[in-house]
Amino acid sequence: MPDFLLYALLAGLGVAIVAGPLGSFAVWRRMAYFGDTLAHSALLGVTFGLLLEVNLNLAVALGCLLLALLLVALQQNRFLATDTLLGILSHSTLALGLVAVSLFSSSRIDLLAYLFGDILSTSLTDVVTIWLISLSVIAALLWLWRPLLAITVHEELAQVEGVPVTAVRTALMLLMALVIAIAMKVVGVLLITALLIIPAAASRRLTRTPEQMAIVASCLGCIAVGVGLLASFLFDTPAGPSIVLAATGFFIITLAKRQSV
Amino acid sequence: MGEALVSARGVSVKRSGRVLLNNTDLTLEPGKIVTLIGPNGAGKTTLVRSVLGLIDIDEGAITRANGLRIGYMPQKLHIEPSLPLTVARFLALGGKPRIAFEEILALVGITHLRQAAMQSLSGGETQRVLLARALLRDPQLLVLDEPVQGVDINGQAALYNLINEIRKQRQCGVLLVSHDLHLVMANTDTVVCLNQHVCCHGHPEQVTNDPAYLALFGANSRPQVALYTHRHDHQHDAHGNIVPPDSGTSLKGTHPAGCEHNHHA
Image 1 (tube, rainbow over the protein chains, first blue to last red):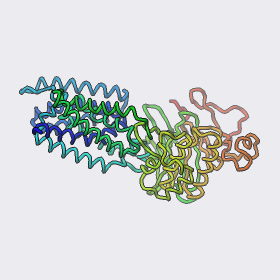
Image 2: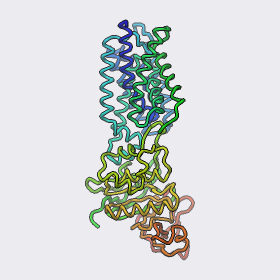
Image 3: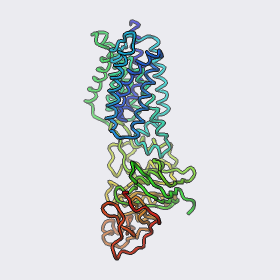
């Protein structure tokens, strides 16, 4: 296997593994649109990262996090429905990112690479970064698993039972921002949410507990990465979209199965 | 009956310029059942959420006993169909049980449901599971927000009976919100009628020989439901303003002095 393909595979697997549990929470908490909004702001993070010459992963994660906090603040004094708010932020940040890229970048940026991913150009450093972040997020998810599930089921009940709801919810956003930063390399800002929610949704019909659903989603995501990369290699299709399509294929197959619980 | 578990004094809550709760007092004691009634929008849920510490109050003070352990049974529970969750798993989310798990399951009668999906439960079963989750914390105070909603009238009697048993057994205080203005739990020690402020409070009359009740609940047991007769010294017009009572109404109720009378001001 050529090096670039091996690195691509390792990068994809690193993201797919963490996308399973995190994507499950995105599905359970109806955060798909929220994830989209964060992902779209990633482009803005890239621009500022290039401008200030800091690590791009860090810039993207910080950008996403700032947006998440802004969103929480805006939600507090709600005069607009959340989906309207998300729609405004999501597309404004995407537009701002596109404008900023063209205005500020002296060197020409491959915009398509950020929009749809550039997994085949993954370097060894990228692979290491992705796995470090991925494993840290998984560790944090394991640590916060029960409180996260508790606030997903009923926030007020969890709060009365002593769960620090705001802190746990903010932590989930932080983890999401980190994963978006590493997933951008694999599938690009426009397809990140797909990588989060499609394997989780496909896993739903195959499983009976939250943990099973998260683990099976990770496995399906990994297989989708393998199948997508193979298809990309054989038929010269774009890698990121091929991975997403492979996951969609699994989802369609699971539709045939009856729901057990 | 010992120290108060929760003592609320002069609590007011305002949201967007609207008064939701005005100068309200409430005392919850160990082993006592307090039932909160009132029309829609009277601030019952606001008062409960204040007691639970879920919302900030604008005026007044709420003191809770040190290390107070509250078992809370929320009014509604919506679990996404995408979340595979059995009853046993749902109960485990409340943390390590402080009292025997099996015992509580048997007490509320959900032993056979442990492996059932939460989404497959009926309204009454969901209420029982929520009650079990609250009880597993071995609470000193049990807060039940409309526990009998969606439960048929026999189920209501059974659930009220159960709450009374638990109160007797564990000597916990109970705060119960009822959606019905006139039917309250028979074992209630105090009924508090709320309409932004405390309109009246007192003991419910025991209705033991009313044929209508015997027909509803059967003559074999003491009724678990009682009629509560309101004794208001004022009435509310269509806008919620206080108007003098009808002539001939006895003025037995207590009304807090200095109570704000322009409810929608």
